[in-house]
Image 1 (cartoon, rainbow, N blue to C red):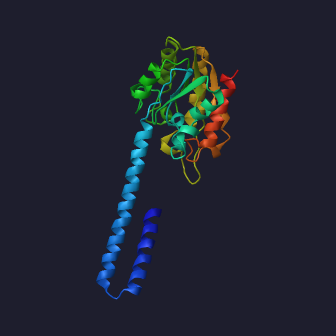
Image 2: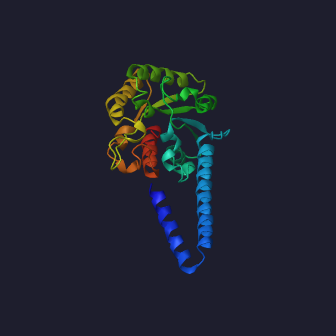
Image 3: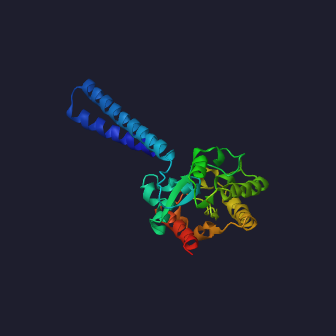
Amino acid sequence: MLLSVQFGKFTLFIWTRITKFCCDQKVAENMILQITMIVLASLIAIAMLTFAYLWYWAGKLPNIKVEGIRVACVGDSITQGMGVMFNHPDKNSYPAFLQDMLGSKFQVLNYGHSGRTLLNSGDQPYRNSPFFTASLQSDPAIVLIMLGTNDSKPHNWNAPEYERELAEFVEIYKNLPNCSAVYLLIPPAAFISKGKKEVAFKISDVVIEKEIVSTVQKIAKKMNAPLIDIFSATRNHPEYFPDGVHPNALGNKAIAETIYAVLGK
């Protein structure tokens, strides 16, 4: 809407200028038409380039190097770095910050995939993603699992199944031949943005706080998986989440620092 209003004002300004200095109304109309077509073509080109960038970036699997202790970061768009997609996600996602903190002895691999759920009954199950397959094939020594934000959506949420499938999911990675540790990360808090009545993307902040937090804690204990509490690290920091869900660079750095405080011990 704002773009339309601005474009309308721009068109009116051009029209006024041209008619002021041009006596021939027909010439003025042709010039306005040409300018309008140029502006529309530019907007379409920008939209296409943006879509192409997102398509390329969202589907890009990490490159695996021979050397380094492999750390597989399994998750959704929060792990992938959607909140910094136009701000160097290769440097400002939480896996990228974690790589800097851990150093060259480690290789942190980002297997986050936007929109994915832990639940197989969810609208976009992580197990159906090529990132899931790639994470298993990466032969990781350490696995970090942070899934649940998209599961909290009303049409996805199923508490008993989430608990059962989370335990199964941990077991899958624990059974990998060279995996020494599987960490469970409690997803970050979600916030209602200013001027909105609910959290963006139909995410339920209530389900995350009241159900997912306790379930991840329970499964971590049951499966003997070290727990990393990202929820507590973010719950008092709405400034980390411009859209209420996806962390910015500052938020991703805080998440990485929380993880590093546990891994570095």
